[in-house]
Length: 142
Image (cartoon, rainbow, N blue to C red; front, top):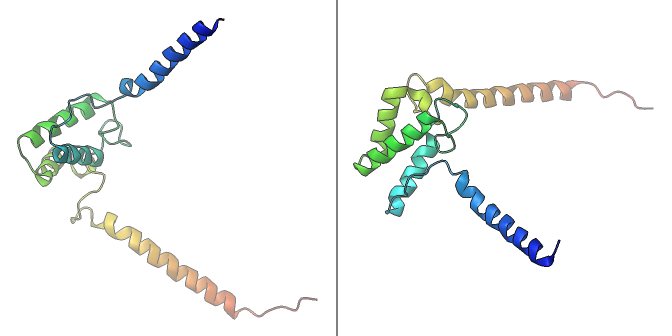
């Protein structure tokens, strides 16, 4: 293989390497002209769960429903809706499950309180074990 052929293969490889991220792009829509609006869009789609994948946000999902939700959120932002109105629309249509961080309400109160209760319970159990161990006699070591 000649030097010229190696250089040509290297350039082709480099072009493929540079172009690869655009092939895997999920959101193919044109970005907003306003950077603040684009940041809001990115923030919202990162917080909304894909209802098909369930372990991915719609920002990372390539499912048809995720694409449809991204398009719908883009439309609502262009119409001037606030983030709260968009979240309300999504929750009304799909339920609290659609949000990665569900709102603090009567239905989700346990989700917000449970981690604190578990930490307090674990700390109390640890203190109880340490107190019992401290009360044990120290044996002779010969």
